[in-house]
Amino acid sequence: MREDREIRSELLAELDWDPELSGRDVAVSVRGGVVTLAGFVRSAGERLRAEADARRLEGVLGIVNAIDVHPPLTSRKPDPEIAREIVTRIRAELPGRCENVRVYVAEGRVALRGEVNSIAERVLLEHLAARVGGIRRLANEVSVNSTAVGVPGPNPC
Image (cartoon, rainbow, N blue to C red; front, side, top):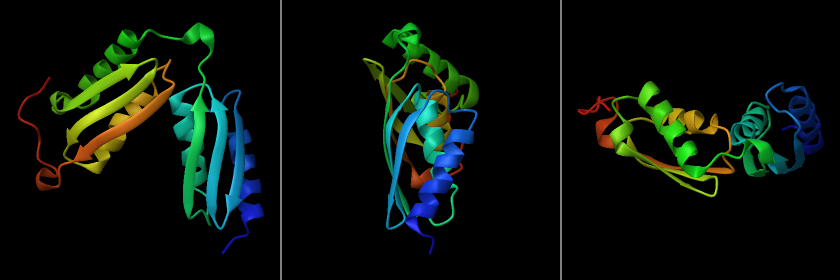
């Protein structure tokens, strides 16, 4: 098992190197192989990216992602615009599933709710939403229908 200080050092180097994390202010602590990320970044995508960087490291047993998203004031989008952009992305990438997923936005906080047929679709939904600018927090509350795994939906959007 790797030492906590080794994991922390490697993750800090990874975060500094990652070109998709701009202007980050993320603190890292590691205890018993569990990584805690805290601080802030500019987008939900950057928040997910920091977590992905931690997930790739050997010796990481768990991750607590307490990073807050603080978009620059000039990039703050109105909630309806955020919702429309997310729905547009879902329709483009998962046209047969968009009727089973709802997008809720309040003060830049997004919640995805509904049901899909696979974990891959659930993860894709989160990544599609995270790439939309102006999101302060993203909650993926979409469940996976275990009885219909891999079965295409009947109603395309």
